[in-house]
Image (tube, rainbow, N blue to C red; front, side, top):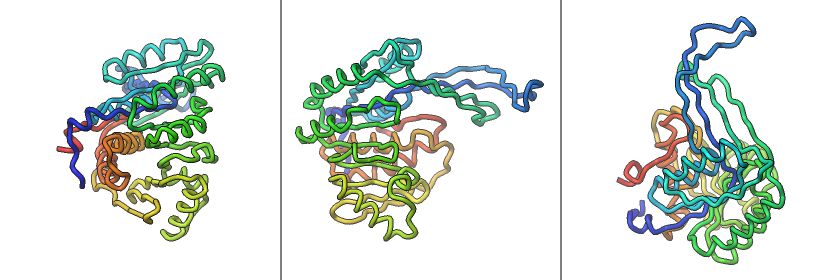
Length: 310
């Protein structure tokens, strides 16, 4: 694999754009079943807040040693201020648009007996006016960065992603997209999109062989004028489809503890290395290794420079 220079990585700047979330964990003990319904009663003993959504992607970029900027829309609420506090501890530079009527997305997970018992989501869609102002901010930020990463969680924060991609492309900046939904036309012209297996099936349908997967992926790539499609396939590894054909890397053999946020780590690694001048094919083995490391951790987690490159 191509070696990574720490100083070069520290000078690389990645602009992450997308839906930020607060990942909230309540840990507790379970000793009885509720008399009100057949559900466990969790006595909460500890609470923990983590960066989620595109904030976790930016945190992954920063953890590797690159510089991360984060452009998003949040509400004027407790969750947004908690997010800002966590972000200040990471070195990420935030550019938040605020919508007074918006409820900042929170994913609350209740953990008991070492397993997730319940997840409750709190969310809303930001106003069009706030999103439009963020597009103007995006145009100002793009020339200062060596890669742009769109982290789409389908919460409404990337309503203008098509225009943003065209602007970044005109500035000759690599564009990486973690996609969402069944309509990928909005990502037209990006450098690479990184759907997982189930996300790709939603767009191109099932495949019965590696040849059919390659055919469907290459067809999608050509339809959307992409440089590449990277399919993350869990235990089957990753497959990159570009104008050179297919490059497949096997999954790193290790115990899988939690796959939450693994896709965030993979695309953050790709973006960080492409900001350093790596090609997709040069960055892919490192991204695969980073995904293998992070699934051995609980919840949304990150990989450090030392863990990945030393």
